[in-house]
Structure formats: C-alpha cells, structure tokens
Image (cartoon, rainbow, N blue to C red; front, side, top):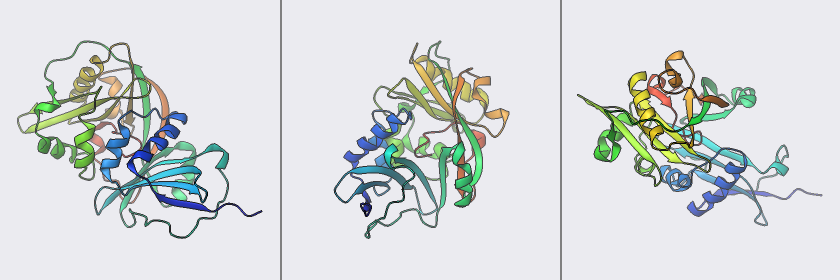
Length: 279
C-alpha cells in the first residue's frame, strides 16, 4: 500500500499553538506567550507537515534573522511517525535560510547526524533548575526605563543578528520581568524572566562579566519566590558557570549548540541563552 503523501506548508500564527503543545509534550516547557514572540521574529519561518488529508504530523522552524544568519528549531515529529520515510508532495515552500550561517540547539545523541549535515559544535548548553527567591540586589534598572535602541544595541553585542520584532515582545511579556545594569557607556547587561508551563525561565542573560550576570540573575529570581526557575547556560569555560556567582541549581538537561558555518555569537557575554527554539 502506498504511503500517504506529506504536504509541507507555512504555518499561520495561530497554528504555532499546536507546535507549542507538541513542545510541551516533549518536556520543552514553553511559555504562554512564546508563539507571538517567535512569530514576530520571522512570519515566513515556521512550517507544518501534514498528510494530504489534513492530519498534522510534524513541524520545524527556519527563522531568517537577516541576510547572513538563520536558526533551525521546533523540529518535532509525532511519535508514531518517527523513523518512517514519507514521500513529500510537490509545492514545498521555499526554504528561507539557504546560504546563511545557520545555528541550532539539538540533543547530544544527534550530534553525529549534525556533523553529517555539515554542522560544527560551538559549545554545550546545560539547563539548570533551581528555586526563585531572595532579596533583590541594588543597582538594577527596570528594562522599561531603558530606550529600546539601547537594548537592541547591547543585544547585538552578543546575538549575531538584529531581532527587533522578536525583542520588543520578548522583554515585555506579561507575568515576567526584565532588568538591566547601566554603566557609563550604556547597558552592561540585561536579563529577562518569563512565565512557562512550569515555573519560569531566565533568558537571555547577557552581561559584560560574571558579577553583573549574578546581579541580574538574583534580581530576576527574587521576583518569583518559591517557584521553579530554569536557566540554560553555555559551557565553553568555567567563566560561564553562572551558578558560581549567583546560584547552585541542578543540571537537568544537556544539548549541543552547533553552526553550519562560523560561530557568530559573543559566547563570553552569554550567561543564559534566550531560547533553544530560536537561539
């Protein structure tokens, strides 16, 4: 019997809710406002795979931030269809990130497959889990008091592409918080806390040095006493182990951060990645 044909098409914004439900089932613990923030990064970058009869079976994102950088994420296939070879119908939408430096965060077990596809390891990311609480330290600014141009400027010293549409929404999520640390020349770091299905995640956590990162972390954690909090940290060196300066949370998940091209981020200023789905 012939296998049903797979149709791949772009998602509408409302369909991201389905992808987020799948992500929650996989234990990714998304946030209630992730969909609108993600879609703002690149409305052309989210794809749904479904059988010709309309049954959705998988999704993937291929977000093009600019002409030079893109990010793969949200690669999920419903469990009963994993490992099967399915014929794809004609008319597949144009892949939006061809020719760009491409990053992705993936599971350690798939590292060999990433290498076969031309990706190179940049660093390992580990998810830490702890509990919010403690006193808010001095020296923090509510990020709403900082101009967006300054926030975007500092974000661009770490993240490899401008992402204004995404960033405007990400830093202003309901049920969240966002702080910055100001120096003589402008921001020296900023961090965002967002609500998730379970507890809260901190990301990004970008800072000039570990002390500033620790101050930001403590301020964000103080806003959610007694709640589970999660932080995804790169591990190229001891300098990035933010737990040494702020928090001793247990590691609960490990993944690889890879590029099909030259690593473009300022890892030395990244103490917490924004999100595994979009970089």
